Image (cartoon, rainbow, N blue to C red; front, side, top):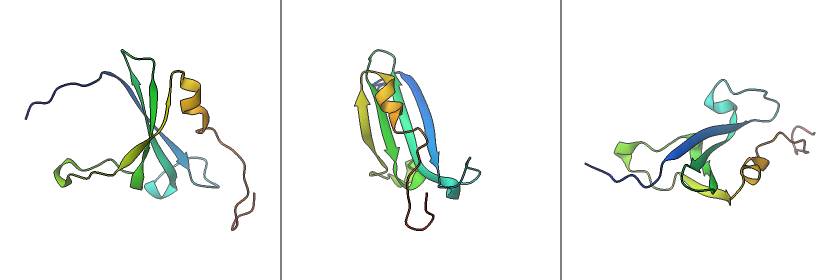
Length: 94
C-alpha cells in the first residue's frame, strides 16, 4: 500500500513524570506523553497529547489515540507547559 508524504520535519517525544518521580523507568512512571511535530516547510509547531501513553497499533486500527493540544508559530508556547511546576495535590500535599 503506497502512501503520499504529507509533511516532512522533526518529531520529538516528551513525557511528564508522575508526582515525586524524577525520571520514568517504566510506563507507570509517566503522567503524560506528548509528541511535538516541527515541519520543515512551515513555521508552525504542534504539540499532541498521546492518550493512554502509547502509540496506536497499526493492525488494530485505533482511531482516538491523541489530540492536538497546542499550535504555535514559535517553539516557546509549545514547550511552555512541559516545564516542571509545583502545585498542591489532595493526597500528597505540595
